[in-house]
Amino acid sequence: MPTREQSKTQQAQRDQDLAQLAGGLDALENAPGGRRRRFDITGVLAPVAVVVGLILLWQVACWAHLKPTYIVPTPSSVASNLWGLITHGTAWEAIWVSVHRGLIGFLASIVIGTVLGALVSQVALLRKGFRPLLSAMQSLPSVAWVPFALVIFQGGPALIYAVVLLGSVPSIANGLIGGVDQTPPLLREAGTVLGAGRFELMRSVLLPAALPTYLTGLKQGWSFAWRSLMAAELVATSAQLGTGLGGLLSNGSQDSDMPTVLSAIILILLVGVVVELAVFDPLERTVLRRRGLTSSGL
Image 1 (cartoon, rainbow, N blue to C red):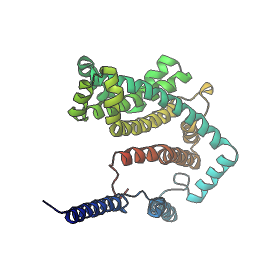
Image 2: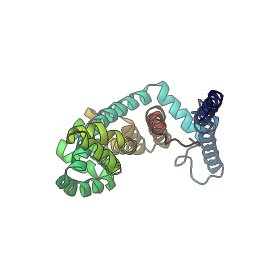
Image 3: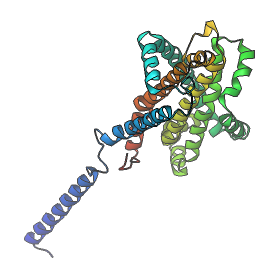
């Protein structure tokens, strides 16, 4: 039977082992690979270097006279045209027209796509009927819907939203269905054992578990929504629709004004980059970090 001194020694040893274990866990948690960096200079300089490199290649092509300047204008002429569109307010007006349409259509797509994805993922008959259709619609080019929508809605604003919905909803629904399908069966069984009904199981168990894949579907849905919007604005131009970025691009093309065409393309790209960096990238990093899925290179 151990003496009192031996018991104290053993207890002290156990306390020391626990302290070392806690220190090791703290060190692992705070390791450079697991710590969120506040500022990644490489993430800023790398895309800037790529853009500068592309502009230099563009300028070299102009110097080499590979194409006439009325077909491929110089970077300086495009920059001057873009600055004129910005200072005169034309660019801001076009951005507002397109962005507010895109946001309204995308928010409606989230509601419809989420409800549809939840139903298809849980009802076997709906899955058999809708899953192949959703996959087919997701692969259909957005511009293919524009002639159909033109006939149905006669060039009104509903045309734009219809094309956005048809382009975005399938991606959002498929993202949720894929996330639910990848949920471990143990979580579903645990929720069922605890008495969760079908709705409560989806809300409290399956949807949180499917969040990373669902978020990927949302990102893809926004991408399709933005491209669908540009396709609709590019083809369907009328006074009641106003002039968005797609309309600005169409006007420049009809006038053979290549600086305006390239300026519109640049603005379309910039809006996409801003939405990605300001909305989806922070949201994705937050979700992945909370799930412990963020790699050290991110």
